[in-house]
Amino acid sequence: MTSRKRALISVSDKEDIIDFAKELFKLNIEILSTGGTATVLRSAGIEIKEVSEVTGFPEMLDGRVKTLHPIIHAGILAKRDEKEHMGALKKHKIERIDLVVCNLYPFEKTTQKPNVSIEEVIENIDIGGPTLIRAAAKNYKDVIVITSRKQYGEVLKALQSKGEISVTERKKLAVEAYAHTAQYDSIISQYLADRWTDEILPDAHTITMRKIQDMRYGENPHQKGAFYRSLPRVAEPCISNAVKLQGKELSFNNILDADCAIECIKEFINHTCVIIKHATPCGIASSDNILQAWKDAYTTDIYSPFGGIVSFNREVGKDVAMELSNYFLEVIIAPSFSKDALSTFGKKKNLRLLECKGLDKKIKRSGTTFRSVVGGFLVQERDVLLSNKKAWKSVTKKKPSKKELESMEFAVKCVKHVKSNSVLFVKDTHTVAIGGGQTSRVDAAWIATHKGKGNIKGSIMASDAFFPFRDAVDVAAKAGVKAIIQPGGSIRDNEVIKAADENGISMVFSGQRYFRH
Image (cartoon, rainbow, N blue to C red; front, side):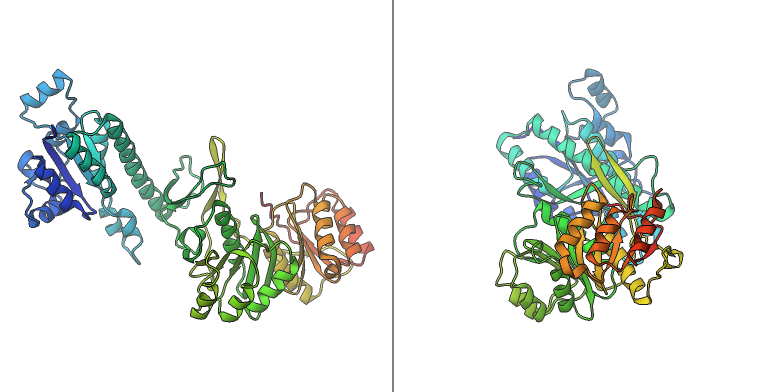
């Protein structure tokens, strides 16, 4: 028989609470309850006592005040080994509360309702619940605090078999309780900040996340890893709300690569394919149909897509599925897949298919991104700005044609997603060579022209940042580039422009840098 005599149950999520309360009652634990929880338990034939019977005060203010009373909180917070505390309880005829079962109003769920009013949101900010939980967790030596139905089984098992749970387990429950209230408050803070303020980088910034899955390992087998979703949930299509339709669980590296593939393809309205390898594009193309987009993207670099990630911004049908089935790919991402495509891909059981609804629509992108460093985070606005074509400046004797300017616009959208230092080469609206992630721009140019070979001739070159020297332009000119777009702004701009003029290349300064580390 347990020494626990009294439990307070006040839950918003009532799943499994009836069975749990019945088992507590069998252990001769008196049950106090409030509002809707009391109604549910009584309806199930469970004997309970309402909190208002104990406090002598009715629930009031439309339920805003139920458990906020010294009789309740003294019963939770009193230290059982403190004579003064126990004397105070006796003097004021307050009985101990040994177990608190509480989860909170569905604030997060409420905010996800379409066209929800701010009044409804505010009414779903719990006040008494967090206070109960924090009080019980503070007095973990004497009080068991339960904040999730996932904890019911283990607590019951311990109470039924031993009559008590260990202090180690009570500490664990207390930690989970504080995490529960901290996350709850953080979601409220973030939601209201987004709704009521324009501040992007506040003095105090709280990040809260909920685990989606444990990974087999992190970037390498010797590292542990997990995937968490940020809260409140992001509404726009992204890796954290993509749905896996088939295949193995996503790995740590799959998720990083898939994120790059999704964010890159959001740049494009036309039928587009993006191929990612090790968190950087190895082929991008737009066309009249996604099958041709895939073929054009793939020919950029026929070696790197092996084991890569592919994203599309249109539904994948049977023709594309048949074509992609000829290659070893890790993940394919699209806003939807036809039944025939799913049947075709179904023969490759390990291939992951991610449905990311909304990629076929124009997407409004905003918010901030976080990068972790040891002991902290870097926070910045998402890089969603494209330079205004009206501000572009032609700086060479030879001027770019209208068609070249269109290709430049496509190239800029591509190069901003390649790891710095980066350059890439395009024809029409498809890449023909990409060089990125180098410590010098001339190396990036040399790698791209070396891989692109004859395909470079007649192409457009884009650079994510200015050319510090003319050497990369000379490399590109030798390979046959006919036009270049770059931000400009180097102290050697005149030298770089001269190199373009000497080689009959048109050059445009966009005025906007796209570093990506």
